[in-house]
Every structure is written in C-alpha cells, then in structure tokens.
Amino acid sequence: MNIIRSKIWHSSSVRNVGKLLSANVLAQAIGLVVYPVLTRIYSPEDFGLLNLFSGIAGVLILLSTLEWYNAIVLPEKEEEGRTLVHLSLLCIGVLTLVLAVSVPFAPVIARAFNSPELAHYWWMMPVYVLLTGGWNVLNYWYIRRKAYGRISGYQISQSLFSAGFKTGFGFMPLNGGLLYATVLSPLCSLALSVSLAAKSHLRALRGWDWSACRTAAKTYANFPKYSTPRALLNNVIGQLPVLVLTPLFGMRLVGFWGMALMLAFVPVSTVTRALYQVMYAWATEQVNARKRMLPFYRSFTLWTLVILLPLLAALWFVLPAFTAWLLGNEWSTTGEYIRWMLPWVLCSVLCSSTGYMTDIFFQQKKGLYFEIALALARVAGVGLGIACNNFTVAIAGYSIGSALVNGVQYGWFISLVRTYEKTISPNG
Image 1 (cartoon, one colour):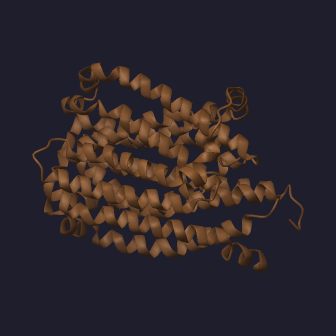
Image 2: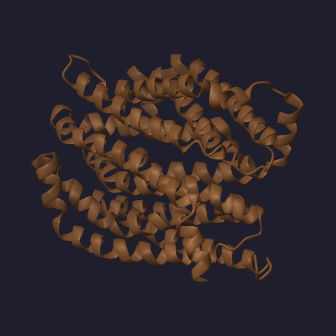
C-alpha cells in the first residue's frame, strides 16, 4: 500500500498538478488583485449584466460542442482523438452561424430576460461562444498531449488581458466595458496560444476525414446523448439565481451574488481545474493499464477534509467584514452570501476534481440522474426564496441543496473506483 501511494505522489502526475496549480494561482491572483479597483469603477448593476451575459453564454458554449470535446482524452490512438477535435470544431462552427443569424432579434431576446441593456451587446455572443468553445477543444487536445505548459500559458495570459482590459475600459467613457473585456481577453489569449503551438501540437490536427468523424460520432454517442443534457442542466440550473431572480429582485442583488460566486469559487476552481486536468489523464492511463486507483482517492479525500474544514470554519467569522474591506462597504452583503456557500465549496472541491469518473467508466446516464437530482434541489431552494420573497433565503437554499447532492455524488464516484478495482488482478 505504501509503495503504491509513494508511486502516485512522486509521479509526473503530481508534478503536472503542481505546474498547472501554480499557473492557476498566478492567473487567479492577477484577477483578484484588480477586483477592489473594479468594484469602485463599475456598479453592482454592471456586474449583474456581466453575470447575465456569461450565464446565457455558458449554456450556448455547452451546446456548441455537444460535449464531444470531453472524449478527446479517452482514445488510445491519437488519430481518434484528432477526429474528435474536428467533430467538436464542426459543431462550434454550426452554432456560431446560428447565433450570428439571431443578432437582428437582440431586442426580443433582451426583453425575455427583462434586461434591455443586453440588446446592445448581443452581437458579441457568437464571437464569445466561438472563442470559448474553441479553447475548450484545444484545452483537451493539450491535456491529451500532456502539453500542460500551453494550458498554463493560456490561463495566465487570459487573466492578464482580462485585468488590463477591464481596468482600462473602466476609466474610459465606454459603456459595457466589462463585456468588451470578457470577449477580447479569450480572443487575444487564443490567438497567442495558437501561434505558439502551431508547429508542436496543432500540426497533428491537419487532415480532416469526414468518414472518421461520422464513426467517432457513433462511437461516442453517449456524450451528446447523456453528457450534454447533464452539462446543460448543470449550467442552466447553475445560472438559475441569475436567470430567474434578476427579473424579481433586480440587477443589484444579482451583482452581489455574482461577486460572491466569484470570490468563493475562483480559489476553488484554481485548485480543482488543475487536479481535474491532470487526474483525468492519469486515471485514464490507470484504467487502460488495469492498475489500482483507490489508495490515491482515499488519500485525496482525507487531505482535502483535513485542509479545508478548519479553513472554512475560520472564514465563517470574518467574511462580511473582509468583503466590505476588500471591495467597499456596500459589498458586505457578498460576504453574507458566501457564508451560506461554504458547505457547497467543500463538497465542490471533492466532486469537481473527480467529475471525469462518469466519462472514464462510461456512466454518463447515471451521471445525468445525479444532475437531475442536483437541479431539483437547487430549484427547490430558489423556489423557497421566491415564496418567501427573500433573496437571501433563495441563495441559502440553492447553496445547501448543491452541497448535499455534490456530497452524495462524490460518494458514488468512490464506489465506481471500488467496483473497478474488483475487476482487476490483486497485483494490478
């Protein structure tokens, strides 16, 4: 057992986690440093509009690839992975054209969300979906090729561009500065990444085979069939407070909620993104080689709890005062919202880091069932807040429901590993 644990923790996978984690920390630190400036330049309503734009975009980005990009890491043969890249890019192109056609109907779309300001910026939606969807595909191609330096470079450059554009536009007589920065940042970072990786990693993507694309679409049909509805449901329900509560409670409270999500989950995503990307590749190799994984996940669970439980307990006492000091006195409400999110943060670290389990073990259908349960729990929480006409109750119910379902889902992930280990030899 100790030998197995030692091999895991001293492997190249751990070094890759460290490489990505350090890049993520730097990238997120750059973003966080400018937020005390941004909250004094932009109003809560500006952040509310950004949250609404990002929420709609998140749904469309998921539809743009039908989740086929998540399968790029799985095939043993690189040709099959390359075909999945082509298939994903084709889907992105189709949806981008559809969104471009929708631009003349921007006022109608804006009225549906009770946000007339959205109409002025809807033309950016197809551009943003194209850029972000394209990066998602390229990101998984980099994971497959273990090009973690390219991933780190994109993350750091994107954060630098975002901080610079948001701050610069804030001092200009320009409406919608946050939205312009949100679109320009991935544009610059993607262009930089493509130019640097053209020879080393992108040359291998040349040569489209339409017959191979059709074959791959059939082979990995579970991704659009189950993973896309699961991811779509997660994203739509994830944006539920923004999409549903904005017309009822206004942009201001939604702006506070968006800031709370950012402050709570930027540090979380910094860690979980690095863990997910490296652990996904490592776990795929372990399964293909029929090797053990359970000792690693036991250690991962233990150390996550040991580190996070005391930290989150301490944060409970200081959050409102801290957010008021960091962002300005009117933002103390953000700290109150984060308090309700702390149990969800803990469960999310465990669940988000290991969310690839459904793909590795081809359990997308059961993963969809968990997503339905999560959606029901979140809808119930938000519905309670609406019934009470209380925004805080809606946020508390949403967060607690998320924590409960994520906790159960992580237990299921561990059970999948246990079941897998029963199928391999004792010396695997």
